[in-house]
Length: 138
Image (tube, rainbow, N blue to C red; front, side, top):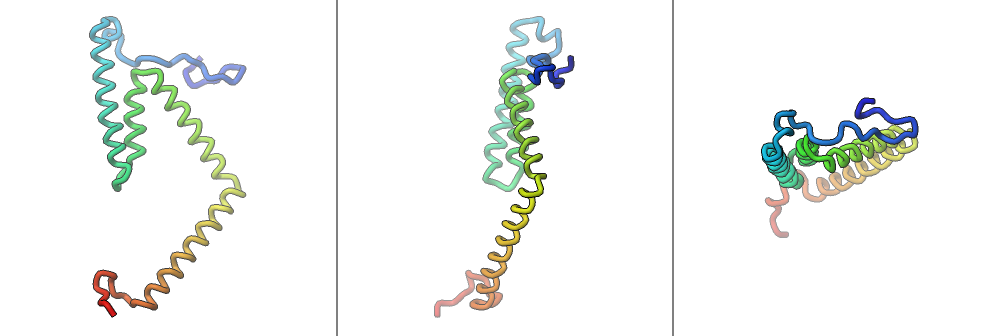
């Protein structure tokens, strides 16, 4: 049975979990341990870079999940976290396709855009196209 196939009772197969290191590395304990330390360090560096990118303009979450994918090549816990995340993202995408949810999101977006347009109109009516840092005290 393939790693992503489901069993007849609906449970995911546990095959495919574990180290993806080449066999010659897994055959030598110290080399495998060194491999795991290196994979962990590289994955940690990528995850930390993603965390730094979260408040900055950049793909923070994508980088974090990239680091998790690096960890998942070697660690079962990371593989399970990625499976859980994939399942939750798929469920959220299916919910977002629900017509009621789409209608609600369109209505909320329209209301937000109208509020922003009204506030922008009030600002332009009161101050014109003068930037806030050039407004003189009156």
